[in-house]
Length: 75
Image (cartoon, rainbow, N blue to C red):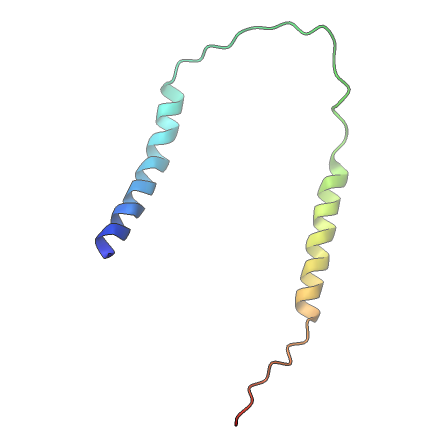
């Protein structure tokens, strides 16, 4: 079991090293395409970052304020 675990870890490490090398060696063939007009989908997404921050803050407050009344009870 230990040998299988070491093999899996070494395989994962090797794939992390080899994958960028293989990707950079691949030939790049991009087709040029013209665009007729611009889309208007490039809105401001800073509200998403604020919402995620607010949710993380609320989650942290809930975790800190949670009353742990799980004191051990001896029979």
